[in-house]
Image (tube, rainbow over the protein chains, first blue to last red):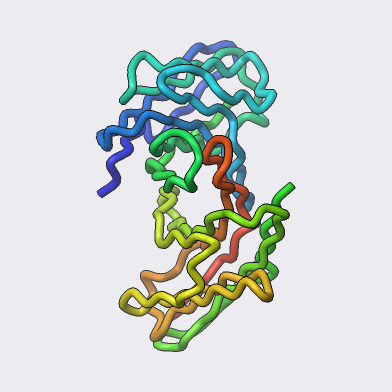
Length: 114
Length: 115
């Protein structure tokens, strides 16, 4: 069983809605990530948090707003999304820094924007 | 910049066949890590293996084996006696030692194992 838990597993939202994706990890990791994955494509990095601070934002539109309340929780707040934002959103965690630390992924949240 | 190439988009085999998934990578760094992940239809990316650039030993784990060859910049993955449960998309990925542990993924290979 994965130790990175994501909720909800499925989310359908309208373009004017505000919703949030939640992620929790129980491995004591201090780096957490959001990836976006479209069908038949590899995951694309969106954000990296290291020690609860935003370290990388891969030029993601402001309608996606990440939040890291503590070292084990990561949220992705969604507002005014577009249908093309429909995708699988994967949360992940690892030990921070380099050294090729293994990144462990959750089961993902399937988002559909209507 | 790094690049990972998985030339095989889709492979179909019959159960009990052996299958090899190819991965070729490019990086100017001498120190890096390579990974394989499995993604079943449920969506979760399951970590399979991590190998650093200094360790060219092949590895075997049950029906899975990996062949790392720096001379050809390849990190191939073989499944012996494939099973239906092996059906998934498999991603090869690379990360550098420096900076954050961000992954450069290949485009993935979809493996379909039929009974």
